[in-house]
Image 1: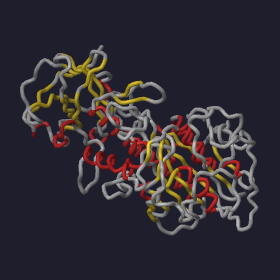
Image 2 (image 1 turned 120 degrees about the vertical axis):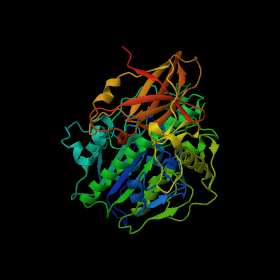
Image 3 (image 1 turned 30 degrees about the horizontal axis):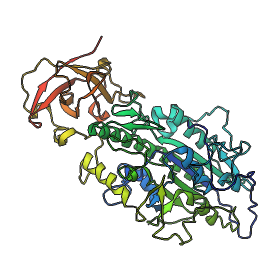
Length: 505
């Protein structure tokens, strides 16, 4: 779960006092605000600049009957500043004090006058404890009812289920708030909700000065990290589907103001920190998804107005028809038509393109990495050096040379001798070390399951060892015993050399 938030703003902190909402024309629609974490909008997009409906059907479903603000950017690259900014409508003061004596005026204090606040989040920096407190009651929700697999029994999945249990019909107007720490790393889940046993830190990650982590300079390891991020984003899409289904079943979906967004993105640039905003990482961290569904909205639309996450509070106030707000708001209602197309935006001092062009580099990278095609992307079809054409071939379709003395050591090799396709923990992540090769030589490895090539990967060096890792699609396995074979790929993918396979003692 997220740590306690800190906030500083550019205006003096005053006691959080609720504004009376009993204003002329006030429309007390139910309000639902959902914030995903560490999700670049480019992760959701296809080459047509739409939501990739094959990979992310529920985000596409939401876009079909909401307004997708495609050119939205966050104000900060870390939750501790980004979340307060979007809930207060004020830019964070990065040079001011980190601790505040009491929460400022926010969407929570705004709605508390007439709304019952429903949240399982602890938000001491933006919401008084009397309004936002974590429930200690046991949750009886059956995770299997939402088809979330092992994720539903983990801490983040349990948080989602707790929130779903708070949704109900009838009663006073309610404000529902969820900050779901997804698809935030660590990446350990398949789109099905099944878990694989990951290592920490992930190959390619490194510690960096300050907050967050960074990437080492090996582009292949960053590509593998991006792959695991996208697979976990597919699970975030499944979580969104569970939320939408619950809102529809409760009768709230049609008549509520629904806001779904992310607090910030994440960088996937070799050699750079994941959250440090630079010209290279700008399009990964700043552009975030934002969908706003107004009550009774009948069809979806796309807006490329240069929106910011500080616009959330004034936009909610606009939809509820509130004319009186607290002073000092930096955001603008996105439905007023007053957002200037040349609006100056910046994140951590780095200026942004008013047209939002920064994100398209990551969109293109996604498609060039996982292949183009009418059938959409296959996130398991990842290979170094454009050898993805080997994936799916049988071993007999590629020349096989005589074996050499190199040995692949695979811990827990026995897991592949008895595979349960429905198991909550599934052996999709293959990791091991390669022995008997020249230290430092990068070896391309083909992984075959039951005689068919399921993945291509490449070795890397760590702690003096030659290591490798690869994600294997669950579709590659059958129930029960499975035969695993590893080969070195040579001559630009034209020949396979068998590797001895062993489990370390």
